[in-house]
Each structure stands twice: as structure tokens, then as C-alpha cells.
Length: 315
Image (cartoon, rainbow, N blue to C red; front, side):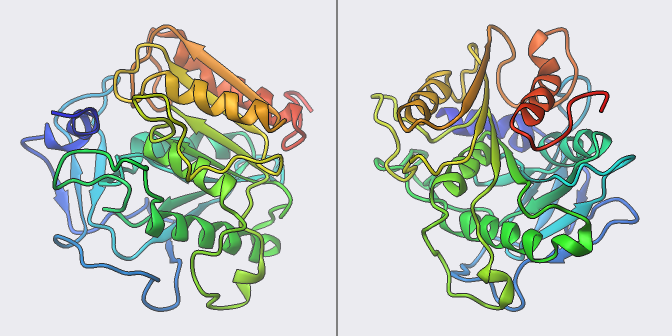
């Protein structure tokens, strides 16, 4: 069994008994906003209807919800609590481009961000999506773009800027954060913003799809086992400031992923901050454990303040 399959096992396949709903819904008071006015670009058939599973296995003492077969992508906006910093962050849950960890790497990230005065936009992007070939249980040699997911991410970021005044967001302080496969999506949108993956559908698509800052948390798909950096992540000096986090005992997406991306960003003279921890494994999200790595949100907050996206603590 390959490593990506093991990661997915943690969220869904290992949940032999689960609660199931037809589609994922946010908590009362929040509404999913469709990304596209009609059929999404490059739509493809799904193996079944969208459904959500709650695992029986525990991660840091709690279950996890995995959403599969997403054909109608949405975003859910969570307003900041307390003083609004003006910053906004789009959240890309992980799940190997086969499913989405909507609470572990989604709503729980929004709980953290909104508590710090940051507008959170949770993206439910289309899955299954490239680059993983689930029929052969192997990674493509050249690590394909996750086309549908990246289209959704670009569209969502443009919509946030288009509706910035309505949502009380500074259009020049819109960032992205992603976990695992979502971390790869962060790298994709941070380096492919000049690559127009779909024809414009309305005025929102006149907005830029370049994030102002990026946080990639235990990312995958960035470097092959042979050490070859993914050619679909064309790092340049225009890549936004980036925060990287990974555990050295991550046996799903090894620490070489963060190291390779860090080296590419430094070579392009992109401001980057990287944190590596001895223990933490993979798919830990923001859930507190005895491992020091679980304190990483505080480091991310300090970093966001040092690059001018949010005020420093106490201001």
C-alpha cells in the first residue's frame, strides 16, 4: 500500500463504521456559496454522489469528517471575531485529492483564524482530482497539476477580492493556507497565478489570483522520491511570502517536501520561514497534543504580523 493510500486510510478508509450525510453542511448561520454560476470548467463525472463520513478512529482524541465526490465546489465565509484585522485566508483542506478533511483541516483552521480577527474562507474544492492516479495506486511521473482543484482555488481567491468591500476584507491582504494535498494546492496557486486555467465567467475573474501570503502545512507532491522538484510549481521572485511547517517523522509526505520547497523559494529570493519539528507525523491539523509542533499556530500568527498582514499581538 502506497503512502498516499495510508494517509487516506487515516481519515476514511479505516472508518469501517461511520455516520453519513449526503453533502457536507457548515454549522447554522453559515451558507455555502457556489463558486461557479453554472457548470464548473472541465467538469468530469464522479464515482458517486457527494457524501461525508465521520471516522471511528481518533486524531488527537477526536473524530474527523471526510467529504468525497465533490462535483459542485463551494466556499463558506466565516467572519472574524472581535477586532477585524482586514486580512482574509482561504483554507484548503487536505485528503490526497480524493477527499477533503473538512473539520480537521478546515473548520478548525477557521476557528483559529477568526479568533485572531481574520476572515476565513473555507474552500470545498472538487475531488477526486489530479494528480494522483487511484487506479494504479501510484503517482504520475511528472506530478500533474490538480487542474479542477486549482481552477476552484483561483476562482475563490478572485471572488474574495471581488467581494472584499462587502466582507470587510483588504484585497491586498488575502492569503491561503493548505494542509497535505491542500498544501500542494497552496504551492500551485502561489506559482501559477499567471496561468489562466479557465475562461472568464464574470467580472470577478478580472481580479488577481495571486495570494498575498501563503502557508503550506505538511505539503505533498512537491518533490519525487528521487529528489526531482515538481515542474508544475514554477517558483519565481513573484511567489508570495511563504510559511512552511513539517514534522521530521512525517512518513506520508517526508520532510524533503518542505526542504525542497524552501530551497526553491530561497533561490528565487522569496521571503520564506520554515519550521521543522522532530515529532508530529502527518495530518495533525491544529489539534493540541503533547508534541511541541501543535503550538505552530502561534508561530504562524507572529509570521503574519512580521510580513504586515495582521497587527502584532497586543496591538
